[in-house]
Image (tube, rainbow, N blue to C red; front, side, top):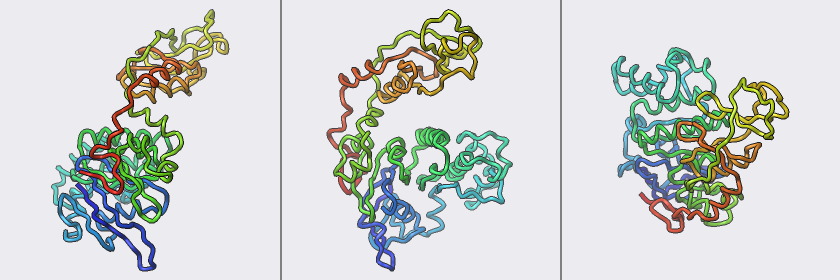
Length: 376
């Protein structure tokens, strides 16, 4: 557990970056700090590992005052991931990952075995181990940064906008990898971002900071979306918060329809439907095709790939987005293995939204709805 008790950071010129912050980051959970530029997110993060010293107040790690701990020893127990990864350019990927274990005195074999294991876990091919950072894409570099932070199995991780420098598709993939790892490892994480969508997706609790380093609200994502504490939080969270809150409502049994399908190479001649779904040999959706435009053999180039795909076990938001984004207005629904199970229409999902019970976010729980302080 990380605890901020009335922490303030004021610089010699009088600028207050963090103003009397009291906040708890619970053990094994992801606490996301979010807010506009100048709200003290990164300053708060860096005070945890004493890269910045607080002016007043105390920060504790599992009850120990960080101001009384040996800096070097403390930092070796904290994983740290920053924007652009911060890799050593003259070291290979494998040696970058093994940086902290080597500092801790691990032998060469143990260090390299651990590094290779983590590269695999973050989704990097084994042949990348001997390359240098400049030979990797931005997304690959960020995966190496996450692996390096995990190498010595630290109980605490600090992450400062680690995915903001990559394109949206890669960013989404990195977020999914990160969540998969966290579900296995259960680290205590403080994560800084300026992106409210990223905060909502990743956080067990989200702390919204105002300019000047004052805590506006901290709660779980579902409560934050439905119960912003004031106009500042409501404006920051966004006007489409009602739609985004649907991601916390699991989809009930969807009224799925069977769908006629084609595979690449089949003919559309004689088909009268305006849109037909194309799947691969394992019935995984590839996209939609307009028979009237093709009037012959289906090719990959003829596919319309704009629609999203939702899981039957997923959320109401996913099902609605699949229906709204589909060119046929029929949302494609798959099982957990990615195999087509049917389609659903937008009005049918809206009917389910109307009849579905709201998630239990009306009563603040241990991580929800408190102004100024999160609870362990």
